[in-house]
Length: 186
Image (cartoon, rainbow, N blue to C red):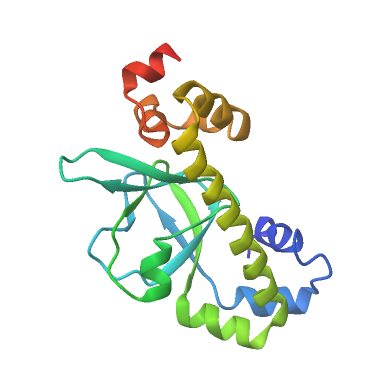
């Protein structure tokens, strides 16, 4: 299993033993997906949460006019799924697909619950990761409400500079909530 994954978990659980890491990884399934391949499609049941070993993925919503609204990009060391569908076992309301060929680890909700039941450390890990995720989501929503397009662009450039080399401008614009023309002016 990926040494990157172990390092990622040890950011929150620094005293994780090799035996415990081995037990944790037994709950995950490695996957490879090609560019443009879906992980989640609207209307489907969502059975997995994904950790990105390698690649770039986007989560997005298509409005009634077919306009794409990107909610999240996920690159190496990020988690991604339709969290509402995954945790509440309802149909997906978003799409998730690969921008690049990607390598992932996946875990089902049942496996995740079992792992948390067996490992207090992993329950702690996911609680901390969820808290970070909630805080980041709050900041993203607030930036859309009160920041100018230019400020959102500069914030994204500061926080995620590597995305600008990996993601087409059209997708950056869809993430920032601006037109491609506005993005070009920025």
